[in-house]
Image (cartoon, rainbow, N blue to C red):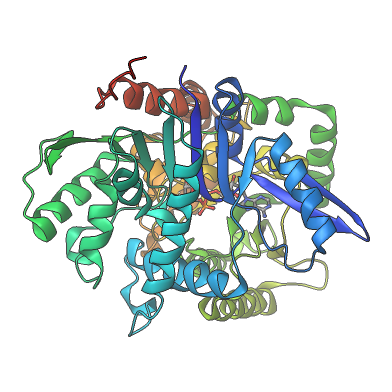
Length: 473
Ligand code: ADQ
């Protein structure tokens, strides 16, 4: 197995500092779990930003570096201005809304392109400095779209893969971007460019045609004498870990408490990062419409919405948070009683057990983003239901809906339609719930994160690349 160099904006770690003690803890996210095996087995490196360490002393920074090295992680420290212009600026104020079809959320002038290009250069430079002949480089996500091209210039013979974790929008959307050409050329530096679904592949192919006049085949394109493979690689989760956790006594105890507090009520659950792509306001409106339209459900429903704080330095996220706060307040004001409220809203992160308990305890899981590359929450919910119960309501604009066709698929823009779907889910017979959940679980378990990593890497490693001439003695 060739050595794997992973390059992503964030390293899969959290740096914790208390007084003079610092510790670097591995994060438990899906990507980190899926990649940790190949990363360790191949003796590879993971290159990325360890998060904000600006408050640490020099001595603490040295300790962080030593601990990162033990985890085979190579830090790329971002300055405050790089965080605000590369990360919050171009990545999250321009590319994120663009790829989610939200052109109105983009600034009228894109000022941060220079910072984006410079940080991409820094990533490429650092990755190239650690490269050894024979290594496989795997670059991740929209923050680093220029990196494959920058690496190709430095390392013509390297094997380079890129995976785009968010939607790749229609070419009609992508080509509105002033720097569209540089970004597409950046991706073409890779040997393999992967997306979650075949429609994103198709959008990327159309964009290459529109922007560069490149004629593409279904699974490859020839550019500057090189063949670049394209493919759909739907990302999975660590299904076995979620299933295990959902069966542990501690989790079952939490589920019991959750259900006891909601005696006589049905539980609707939503779990998201607080992001304007996740469709929380329309989801809340659908719950409100249900209570409005169907008085018999008043007092018999409890909707638990958990939202993890996210990108709090970006203004649109603060405004979105206020919108959600206001809607929750309005619905509870209208339909709450002195004994309970219909919407139970938590603005925080949950630990794994609490998450598993919510998934396991839900009658209906509401996953209704207005646009989402894949959406792993939908898959985590299915993996956490060894009891083969619970209904998944899933947006047709989440990549996951391509695979999870036994879910109740909804249009998240159609509030009235979502209300109907929630009602149908609440009334779905047990046999139908079981039939659907069984099929969903089979797929989520078969196509887990390890399957995803294996498929991407096998495809990448099967591609013949220009080899260096062996040196003669
Ligand atoms: P995200 O937009 O972050 O990922 P998602 O795929 O749903 O979206 O992953 C979110 C993760 O955060 C899940 O693992 C979930 O368990 C966790 N999470 C959410 N709310 C939480 C809470 N309150 N407490 C604790 N944990 C919580 C991006 C793309 C997605 C794509 C992934 C992977 O936007 O479309 O699926 O990358 O490629």
